[in-house]
Image (tube, rainbow, N blue to C red; front, side, top):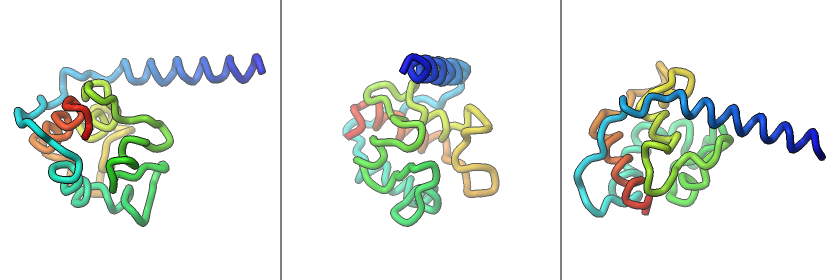
Length: 130
């Protein structure tokens, strides 16, 4: 049991260290739009850019973004959305391509989201990810 707890602590520390290495100052700002919702604003972006690998039929990394519940649940590195704080949300880091190894969509797998689309995702998360 002790070794298991040590392993969990080490893995958690590594995850925190990796997250800290991301330069959030490079994130596009959240858009200034009130009432951003998943179904109305975010799902259409994800349908176009993310469903091929993270939709109802395919779940790479155990991540689905085809519903609010699935997106908030996250995948292998869950959770990836920190409600109220998009700058700490790994989903935003991946979409903004702050870390090449975590960039979504990966090179050659689709067009990266625009700064405006990332800003809309940020606004949605900052407003509570509803």
